[in-house]
Image (cartoon, rainbow, N blue to C red; front, side, top):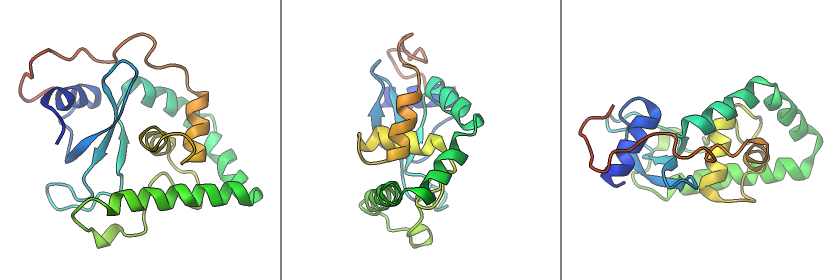
Length: 171
């Protein structure tokens, strides 16, 4: 379970209370969470395949700009042209599923489902960036490529001002 300060930061970043957070999967160089790891089943029982969630609004906005540029179409096309890239992306898909499967409870409804369009297409750069940050370099090739294109979202300092003491139901 994440610390109260992390939950407050996540709520401020998202503009709503975070749901079913298992932990912080990655921290921004500023020290705040930028990727949350979610439970495979939400507290209301809904299966939730998105294991890693990009929470930093600056990183998310920059990633959204890249999505709008048509980058996902280009990446998906490359999957059909480059067998080594396709194999690496399939490996990212398998790593994603293995990590989620390692967390109880088992959620058969989403077995074999990852995120971001893996393994056959590129559908959501936010999910791929979150995976790349959480898993580290060399796991998700398109997440790594997208990260290399992003500006240093943390350079201006923290994206939200988190009070020293938790303030209850933020925001």
